[in-house]
Length: 352
Image (cartoon, rainbow, N blue to C red; front, side):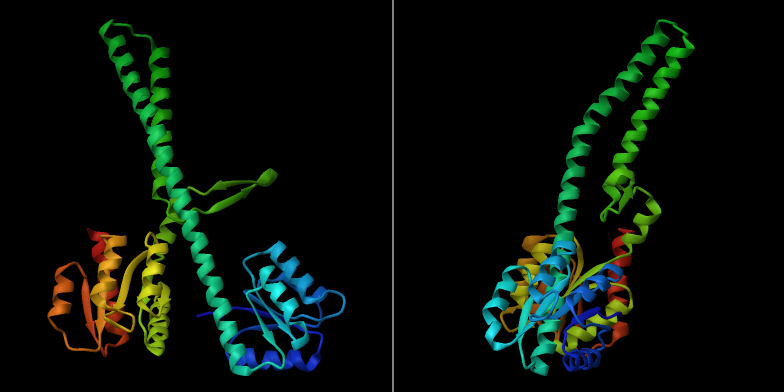
């Protein structure tokens, strides 16, 4: 899995190298810049997921750099580094869109945690925006289908009635029949375009001249996107949570992680139109598996939920399976078992 790219901006040479060493130890690809102007030039040529910038620099300071970054690409996460005397300014940076700030001298473990959280927050925000975009798109298409298909039905029915009436009156006018055929053909074409809109879950936006945008209706590109399957993992054990993420992403699934019942329910509520399978640890610190299962089913009665547990299979788990959970995996389980079960779920879904 490719790690997020980080741009480090600091006018102090030793600080830059120190940050580079720490971040590369965490396997992040790192690019260094000595001031804000150089950083802006690099950002024009390359894309980054996170910028770690010193607050006090010549030419362009951290605040001005933050404002320019957010004006160009608000999706880039920014962490500001500051000394004790500049904490108030750092807080102002948060108001301007910075993800976080760190006080110098940098604590190694704190840097690691803050970077990880900033990137996770950025990814969550991206997914939320994508979910909102899809909801808006789906609502628009549903409305368009309803409002356009009604008059289309009238046009097609009226065309048939006109054709039958001409035949009844024995009017054999070739041009009139050609016009009717052309009208029906165009109506069917509009219906086909609407059908293709309905089939698009992730619209691809094409740039066309004069700054306009269009949705790509090519089915082969949509088929490629339909292969993107989202899985929500609700698991309180951190190591297992991330191992499962790596296993499933290696199989090209998209994975969303939750460490608690509350977080998992919140994520599913926001993304249930995107998430196709939930992998639910049955024993969480803040709720029972039954409670989480019931909440997920309230959000989406068709939710596909696989239960995992380190305890013995008991009556509670059996009752949950009877209530609609689609599978159970007892811990420990290996990568082949989890991948095989999820593949079976998707295979059944395609066949049904």
